Amino acid sequence: MTRDDAWNLLCEYTQSESLRKHALAVECGVRAYAKKFGEDEETWGITALLHDFDYEQFPDPVDPGGHPYKGNTILKEKGYPEFVRRAIMSHADYTGVTRETKLEKTLFACDELCGFITAVSYVRPNKTVKEVEVKSVRKKMKDKGFAAKVNRDDITKGAEELGVDLDEHIGFVIAAMQAQAEQLGL
Image (tube, rainbow, N blue to C red; front, side, top):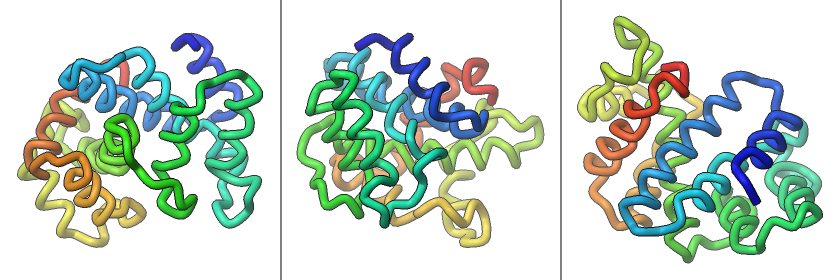
């Protein structure tokens, strides 16, 4: 299980540049937390990078062959460990897979938030994450018309499950994304 293999798998199943950038952003946040928690940054990063790799081709969550079920099957066939596959399954509440490990909780906590921070970046004057602050994210969270597809409850629930203050969580993920702004295209 290498990052290069994970990146190639992501690119094989995901043609959308924005979905690839989302995977990179979530990887960024999850890796930063792995470092903070003294966990395996590579494994956590790979898990985050692959969390939505099957979404573009198999988006229907109602279909047991859809996202993330199909991805779980593909990863199992490729020999990815059960704990990685379980973390990916747990990031989608509708699978019924509960989040119990720190990795599972971190992936869930970073997923929607990274998407939202990216959206906030695009409305900043220079369209860069380097201009994003916690207060601007919190303000935009109140605007239900802004990035309407992002589930604000999941952002709040993610911080709660991780056991961190929401503002601290937002700030931590912003800082992680700012450190990788060039790679993220932000």
